[in-house]
Length: 67
Image (cartoon, rainbow, N blue to C red; front, side, top):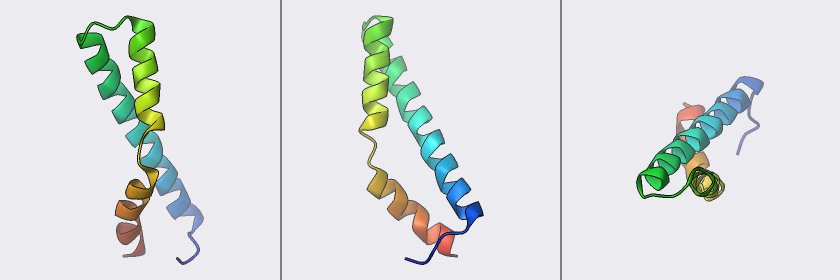
């Protein structure tokens, strides 16, 4: 893999951040809908973000970054 430029690193960081927030938000809403209390929904949201497949996210991002 070639060295990434500062701009590419920022794009990747932004993608990871937005994906984590999207996944966590969706999981929080689902957990709350399923009846979990706020603390339980928060734990589910954090777990979803921590379980994110970073290798798959990077693999999907790399072809776009190379073009």
